[in-house]
Length: 485
Image (cartoon, rainbow, N blue to C red; front, side, top):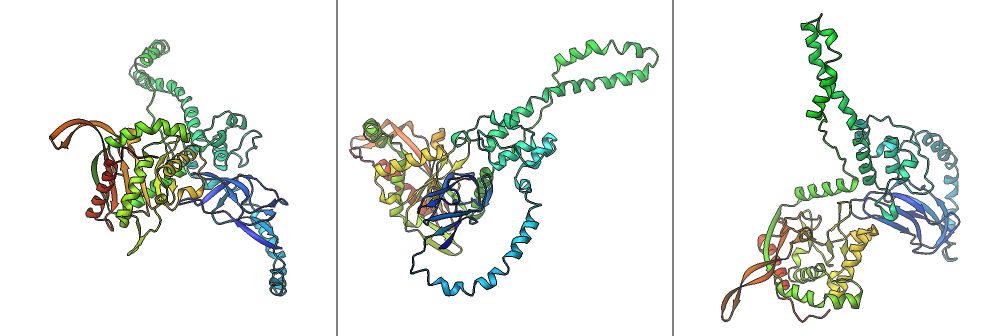
């Protein structure tokens, strides 16, 4: 019987740890290959950890709600080794037990005495809690929180609740926006902001203390006669000043970045420091494309059960242009240019909490328009519902971001490292445009849009970047009005 160490897999770029949400298998359970062993949560995705081998779960090396680093051993699985493999380790196992058996009792006893006292100290690693404590003047209570019987809370949420003296009953009453109604850090911080703001009106009685100061100076000027008049005069004066000037101090709100926002910020700053950015623009007449989509969208939805958007159309045009200009589909490693064999298109997607995630369509050049449409819709739905898997957000080679979704006509996007180019598509607007005809030029109402390409000037110069962008516009403008999908 061989023992296999199950590791916490890599969760994609910039993700170094995950929280164990739930064990799906218990010690003693038999696990088939690719069976899910546990559920985990990161700031980007919630997913399951499958077992790459078949065997029996012997030991769970981490507990639920525990934060575990990527690459750490999380479980031991005992596999059924074939008989042919059994004799091979036997000669090796014979000398091995002698050195291993002796040190086993010593290291086991030592860590038990060493690690038991600091066990309740993972709490200070949570970022942003010092500011919360300093802002509210709360004294950190006990590091243990009674576990809710009706709801799951991550260690970060529990710790914030402890710092803010929130009871389990109050915590259970806060609505959550996470998967299956899970309470996220943003939900709790939003609740705390409203909870902290309400006691602020108590500062109003402090304001009248200011007008009492001149009364003290008047006492010094008239010590004998002013003393009996003071109790009666301020009483009518206080409400008059309060009604004329509401003494509510303006207080700036301090919002601590969540982990995902910090990662995005660091990634964007790193990209600007790494790549000299150049952005080129082109305007495209996409009238034929818009009319074609209007003509087929209803029949497509009835036949396929989902909508066709402009995004898969843009991706198809980008893939064709990359095939024409493959040096845009590269990465840089020092002085080496790595030309990517696969064309994996990343599509920037806004999340309900305001953050951004970039799922990837793998081998987009091998998909037709129908396949691209289904891939785009599937990834977008998984992103909105927090169902993306770690493999869904890695290995992209070129990125598309749709700034037109927010009504913008153009943008200057930041390159998604380690890629060397990113395309921003603007809103499609009806505009008067000059059309060349055999009979002469005419002005007509056309569907126009701007495309903007930011590229790494270390390896993509103006000629390559401009030609690539113009080729994308060409494929969109020359769209086949009779195309079938």
